[in-house]
Length: 290
Length: 332
Image (tube, chains in turn orange, purple):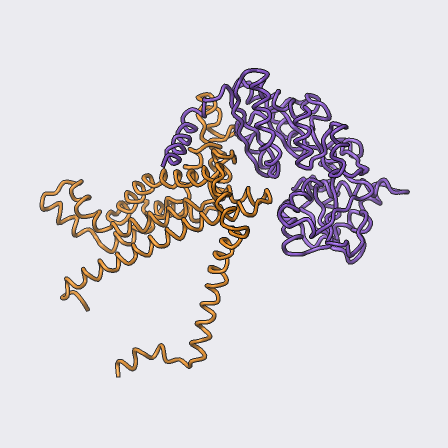
């Protein structure tokens, strides 16, 4: 009886199942598969040697490196702020907590272009700190620091957002146990908290990293588009395309797509490990199963 | 690996010192299809400057939409020189005090080292026999152009049609406005920019004619093949200028006035002019214009100064809020 009930969901008439499958797969194919294939087809339209030649160009290479450098530069800040914010929100009660959560979500709500303009308003030569920065000859806007700031603004919710529900569900029992057994704050963090959240943290890192590498709007506003110096890959793709250099543009886009695919694979591995670990934990605690 | 180290080093260096390897570093902020012109021009100038002044100079390029670029310069992008495709954009910098008020007099030819002309791109064989502006305004013709209010390309198209109508027998501002109104009715959409308009016309196959720069036609040929379209020169069209200027505030701060001025002056040299011609921009040098006559068929042109009394005045009359474009477009 019960097994009959369980398989009920797959006992819809065949035409319903196949229609749903076709719609689902067709959507995936047209909106995700086809564009991805198109990028590589366009990039390789004139053969592999020309594709490689386009990638060899020093400006394209420096765009690739700058993209990676910016992604790496924002990472430590994102981890630090993300863990700190999630820790505070998940483990403690304090006034203004909901305000803090709203603030963390702000970059999701604000359009990236507006985010870029915020930095222009602050650090541009007509902005609040423009005069001071010019006097000290410090360049933030239209240079790499500004691009890192803009990327940071766009990506910082990812890790906190990933960790808050995880830490909340874990509660603070284990930490309290560690403290009462005489662990110092750091010992507790390294031995108890971090191992508990490591997969969630890694997952957040991967998400924010993907966003950092693909960000266009905010970075475009503060970049200044100096070739070989402040062009990231997405910006470089746009410029090449506007210059009627389709091969170059699609070649650069294909690198971006490859980076995204690598991220996707990493994400899948992390998800798989996460699941394996929870299954293992559940298996160790048979009594708690319901 | 060595490349990785090198690029890390470059990024760090630019973070810290802004690359002090050359005797001087110039940044040229330019419009977005100018890359080919300056990619070839920059090494020429470097050689010239080394030979004549004994200095090595590093040249950097920044490209983007013309108006976006001058905004960036106004907000602190430290460009020594600006090389644009619209006088309005340099005027904007002059108003902000970054460029000399009399920038157009600082170099010959209205500070524009080369020019282009607005032309029609039509389908192969010109099936609708579009020869002149009047044909574009005829019923049943679709014209692809960028938005006249916020793109240089679109403004040039609008003003070209206006000037043509004005110069017809019995032409007046009133008849010109009517004519432009009819032309705009034939535009199924306004593209966001020059490249967007090209994509709409060539790739999506929309419209019977695309209006763009003569120089752009060659870039279109590069991507889409020469045999796929024809270029039509109307009986009268705008001579578009590509004004250049030294950014006074930046060169004073960086101490690069000498190099920046020389960089722009050299655009008028034989080498600089020939480079422009090879990139399908009409050189000011009469001899070279003749030499490259195959690229540049004779065409009757007007300048914005002659017909509209300057770029600023043209902008105020036609494209400011409540200008003739708004009047026509609301009426539509």
